[in-house]
Length: 209
Image 1: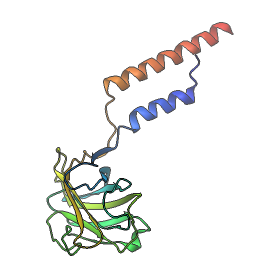
Image 2: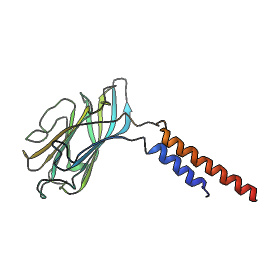
Image 3: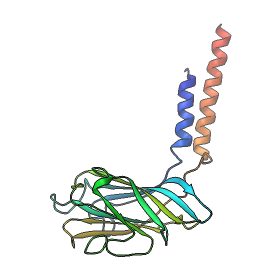
Image 4: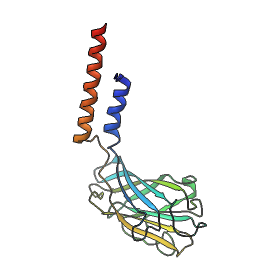
């Protein structure tokens, strides 16, 4: 068996990079999931000052298993990753960010009007019909050191149209900022094994030459 250098490099990259994203996923059978699956991911620190940190947060809704009406759509989404938020913006959203309005609110029966502390809400008309997977990426600014990192400290919401319809509201886990992680024992064993095979193949090649 010959392990080429490019293959080994890819192996190392997969082992270290794939573990760098920290995410929490709930659904489809949680209390108010309505058949959907919800994933909240910390994509990492964007900027920081002496008093604030801005993190890029991904919120993914897989509505392919939605149990409500097939004509419904996701009208509002909201995330809470800290007890206080000083600013927020959208990086990307279904059909483009120009269709979504961002405010520092949570979802109530009237849309993004809850005014909940720490919540960031995005509101749209009808650009996220159920039956597909959608992603919202926010830049969220919080006071330094206040990002939720414990189990089920963060929260997510979603409102399936019509207004005053089916509102998802659940706690979820958000991992720590993205960083170069220490390899797990299993990953380390795989890496060492791969290096051993590569070194042996190099030795055999030279011996034959």
